[in-house]
Length: 104
Image (cartoon, rainbow, N blue to C red; front, side, top):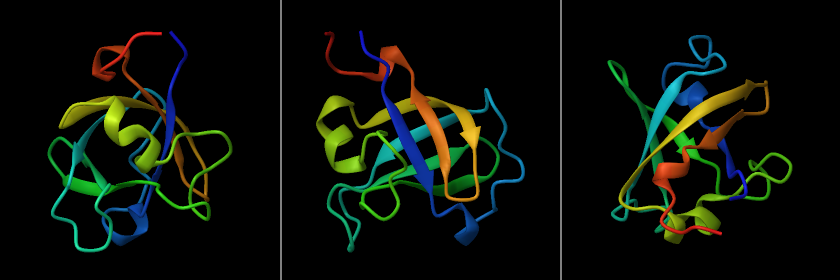
């Protein structure tokens, strides 16, 4: 199965990204009632709550990572990921295999 990567963005609007490091586990949750993006996937961290969103714009998605729109139908209502790399432009995370609703 191919590895699936996403970009965590918007952290500066919540708690920043200083606490994020490689291996940090995060939770992804679909947010269908989001007034700005019907494919929004919020990202939460245990103990803090919402820390950002899965990027869903060509301006916020880093490299070949998957946008929220491309990921939306590949996960259930909740999924999990691990931080792989923290950058100033965003945080790259790998979706946990068990969170994917399909197998290649």
